[in-house]
Length: 84
Image (cartoon, rainbow, N blue to C red):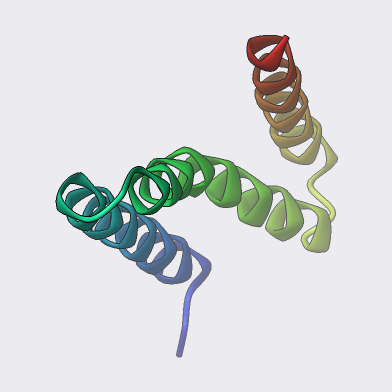
């Protein structure tokens, strides 16, 4: 049986390994590949918080869902502010 914790753990591992591999290959190949690796590393924690938020919403735990939504909102706002 697949647990939410196991699924989130798998997503974190896959995201970090994929991002690190792409960044390493991009170091020798091209900057575009390295940028995709860095982007994967940046999006990994965001995806983890989104998965937790969806889980809390499904369990109708609105306090933790609100906290996850707040963290997602701060990550998005911080990303947009960094682009400016």
